[in-house]
Image 1 (tube, helix red, strand yellow):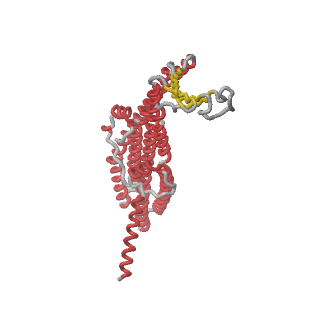
Image 2: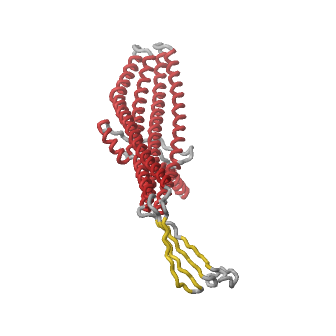
Image 3: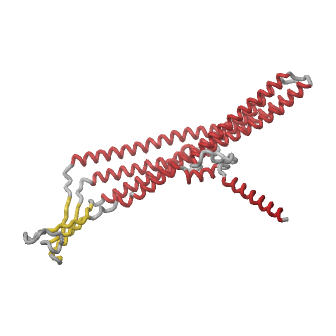
Length: 420
């Protein structure tokens, strides 16, 4: 009895272990892969750390410079009546000057604003890096889905070819068909086995690419894709609406807009440099052990190097124009890529509908008719094989259209900065 209890416990533990292992293996859906990529992708991690570093530069950019302390010992020999000394109480007098540099009004705010805009730009670039990684993961998942389905279709076609070979052998044995029909069926099976080898090799390569995106070892296990998203219908893909969403949410455009703000604040700061900066100081004077005299100091810089400042102002103006042009170029590029992907997605959805509603049913009817005709001796075996290939090609066209629509959808989401 005890042996049965132990065996049952071990079996339950093994079952739980296998279940946990299956649940821990990602790849059955794209959401599990995206979650891992967000956490472990090294390129994204680098961008996020840079964004954190840029955010830490905002506070110091608008802070006052550190104050300075200057100590002066005056008349260290007391009229040449003693040896030189470094003790303040024994020298003629000592002065302690506390000095603070103070920029012109508004300069600190501009520096802080420029640093904040730079931090916003870096953060938006990190968001853009995530959208790029998400696009690559979604595209790789769509490709894995296509390859797994294509491999499944090839296996089913191989099984069908085996059954056709049996039909051909039966007819050949009964003297109703030529030996060439059997040989043709065997050649078809060999071609399908070669095709399966190709699909399996490409699946392994695609899994390696996916693991690289996820920051996992190249040989780490991945589940076969089981679920896919449904791409929007063509009626939902309004280009103008998508372009407006891209203008508002695209991380690339937001990064360029923040860079433009930083350039404009840098230009304003360059014009502020026409005005002087100040240095103020407070100096208590020590005589022996008492402080009886206090001095106040104000220092002002004289902005005489006007040619230098004019060059800096022209440079800042050029940087503003460059940032503005860069933002315009990014918007034009997004508009172009968005139009291309919307058109391609609509075409893929139309091809998917055509393959599902017309091409595949027609191919299946053709095969059934050819099979009946071959069994009745009215159709040759070549026609039957051609009908079988038409079914395989129709099914491959269907899954290829689905994969293409998923890839185009992922690219559209990358461009507009959010999921549809």
